[in-house]
Length: 315
Image (cartoon, rainbow, N blue to C red; front, side, top):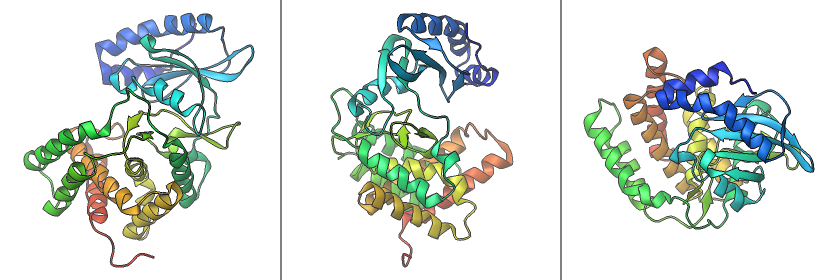
């Protein structure tokens, strides 16, 4: 019987309430059932991510694997479909799935993330860009389309701008609304990761780097450039010239991913405005209130403004 890490249990209950407590009570039995059904034996310390428990396992005839069981949530519905579409190309392979349990048996990567392993910021962004390019394959049927969210994005941005106290200039909000309306409604039939950042890219044996934890959206690959830049916020905060550092990320990612830089910039600006409003409404897991949240909110505002217009000249 596995032991559920205390921190994972605490954050699950804090986020999901009674439903989280009930699921945690069932989780050891779920793991026992699935390891038995799939002929696996535990093989290491239990780990966890934001919403899923990860149990290293072995079974005869299969490379080292992990059993991942996620809290049942619509946002995790299409993770296995995405792995099937990639077929191990730039991402961990899927060996088994139980959609009712939100469970998968996956290829085991190393525990080292791109964020932890590579100190050079340009190389982090370049690796993510090259991997994003490989993951941008024709999308299978049945996956959620980002274009179907465009109207809701626009409505939310306008509502947040009107209802929340903020210091974002109107031109900054208008630029994000324009992205939702112009880029959001007309997107290609391409599979995108949806949450591509350095902690969702792991060292591996079969390939140097493999992606994990996809959302599995159909849309513009440049959308992932925005999620990556947002995840680089704390590293960017240490830059002597923030504007130069932000635009450097855009340059490196667009080049590595072979994407139009202007589309990457616009999606990054859109993500930054969303983050600025989200901070005011909900806070973040790393900061629910107080001076730290105030700092993050102000930094999101600054990123959104820097991304709204091109600098006078690019290095």
